[in-house]
Amino acid sequence: MIALLRRDLALALRSGGGFGLSLAFFLIVVMFVPFGIGPDRATLAGIAPGILWIGALLACLLSLDRIFQLDFEDGTLDLLATSPLPLEGIVAMKALAHWLTTGLPLALAAPVLGFLLNLPEGAYGWLFLSLLAGTPALSFLGAFGAALTVGLKRGGLLLSLLVLPLYIPTLIFGAQTVVLAADQMANQTAFLILLAISLLSLAIVPFAAARALSVNLR
Amino acid sequence: MSLWEYANPVRFMRLTDRVLPWLTAATVFFLLFGLIWGFFFTPDDYRQGSTVKIIFLHVPAAMMAINAWIMMLVASLIWLVRRHHVSALAAKAAAPVGITMTLIALFTGMVWGQPMWGTWWAWDPRLTSFMILFVFYLGYMALWAAIEDPDTAADLTAILCLVGSVFALLSRYAVNFWNQGLHQGASLSMDRAEHVDSAFSTPLYFSMLGFALFFVTLVLLRTRTEIRARRIMALMARERLE
Image 1 (cartoon, rainbow over the protein chains, first blue to last red):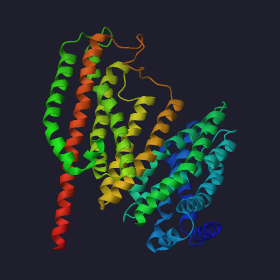
Image 2: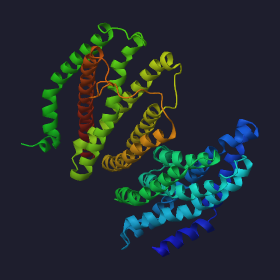
Image 3: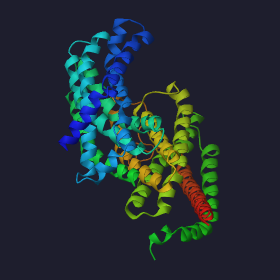
Image 4: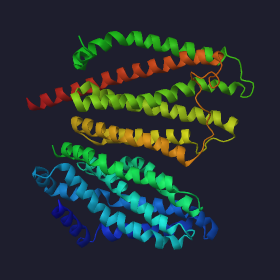
């Protein structure tokens, strides 16, 4: 399992594809907001938590189809499926690799981009923490969507349509955590529920995704 | 004699063939009865005027929008556990009906909300939940449409329906946390104070029954169509082999 994780990490880092791209995408989305809204600092501060969360979420979405697609095409996935490793473990490792290469860098980059949008003081730490807590849910749910669409030729658009509705609770509680922190209100409830959603996804999604994968590999 | 006998497509077709005319008649009767009574023989509300009559479309449609998803969930579970094809096809058949009910509920709600709340749309929890339900239906139907092999499609959509149900339910409570609402509480309830007047509730029950029958009729009809389409596919495959 660890070997699989290291392999996926090495592939993601060295092939140069998804790793830097999603960060660049995040930067561009955040940069576009003032272009669309106008550079008024008070307005930007009001919408900054939501924009940063939505930007991170969309950046996460970009690299989802890579989770299984390449391995499916060259047959690695078939080999992995026949290996003694349970399919659920493979899914979990793949999702974890996706999180380490996408969710974690996004969480690290978000506070920096917060400066661009004049994010209120006191919300920076919570932005980082909420993304740290919420992006695993995004990666795992995304792995589920990727497992559903892996057999399709042009699954990318469908993948977004399937996965985005599943992201709604994560987005609501994640963004609320930061919004409440920005308004200096108690945000523990939102943050704890966000953590709960992440743990729930970690617990149930590998089974559903493994089942979908085995259907697609049939 | 058990319910599972009708999982056999031939038996299912024979039964539905006999039942459908009666169901159709009952649907027409209850729908017309409930709606005509509701529209023409109920008094105007003292504050809402005649707009209150939208309730006879709005509430039953909203009820069926949710129930259609629950029916899809049950059918998906039956397909995953017992692998009866009729069940998978019924889930597929129910989705377009469910999404239409969702749209009816959203649209009638907007028509009512404009004069009453002064706005076509507000990000109220109930309205938002229905919007979310709508996208879940969209994803489910898109997945059915995208996959060619019918059994793979049935499996994957069933899994999506299960996971989707969990997250749709989560979203429903998440939006409560996120925004306080404009929408009034339940119109029908055991609690007298919350319950609408019986002048409205009696025709509403008829209308709800009519919508439920309407849904069952449509789903049975569409399932029959799906079974026939499946049969044609099988026949064509056989012809190609020969």
